[in-house]
Image 1: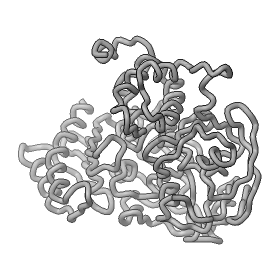
Image 2: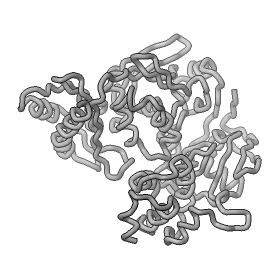
Image 3: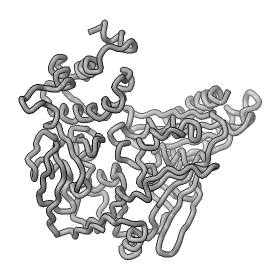
Length: 172
Length: 275
């Protein structure tokens, strides 16, 4: 049994983007704050802090979750991946990121890290989704700049040609 | 927007968890997926002195086929059940209802039992449990208890669970037919439902209708389908009986109107699926 009292500080370790890291936390610290403040992984953004906006979405053991609705303690010993894991060591964007750049799928970029992580999980499970399925996953994110059209175009480019997507492709 | 301090405990066994609940009672909250509880902690709507984290407990992470019932452990996430190969055959209502529960990202962590424990009146899973006449399995140091869905949710965010009890699983009866439908009206997909309507075909003459978001608990009625006027009358009767449940999203009158219009559509769809 793991027990940490309210005023106690403990050192926890986890794997962040393939690297074993450790830092001090207290029970009430959110994973989003732990990543940004304790591990300096500021690619993960914090918007609403109650699970609605999706900016803070990260992968825990490969699964996209809200890091603001997760305690740092809950990620102890787990494998966490953030937006910093996507580009190559040389800074080359991955396919999904490149599709976002190609299609002007971001303006201020605040919501982008969360969206990229959601679709990193979703597309790994469903490499050939329908447009409707992409929209359903995107509904878990709020973007106030793009109107979502550029994001949908980027997602469709990233998943590649598919007959069900003909309509939107011919429009763009 | 940060939680107040609390003790964090991650027990390894059910026995450890119920010992903690016996000791702390109402001051403790059980944390599974946290998709409602963590938001409430961040907004400081909940202020427990201890969180008991059961999310990693392997003995609670199972989906068991008991023949006439499917038992879903307290750590099973909504997406895990959605990906369960037997879902469409054994629990077709949940196969159509689960996609309405939050978003892909919250279903990755949110649990079936957690949603039922939270007992939000507009929530899809308590509605499904009530409509299918399932049951909630509880454990405490005092023993085991099984509560029928209709006796479990008492009111908005209030259940029959005693402070020292842990929900270890819920059981959904296996459905014989495939006649199910689920409809929902919400501001955006994944938002809290203004009204949620579930229908299942019981036999050739009867449909069971479940309505969420219009009262403190899900409302379940049997509706006779034979005779042209009888179904319409039964729905009208139900609409007139509803308490005046309103919030900033919809007036009681709008909710009644939505019920009058959507209930026949849901029943018709369920009948079509059954054929």
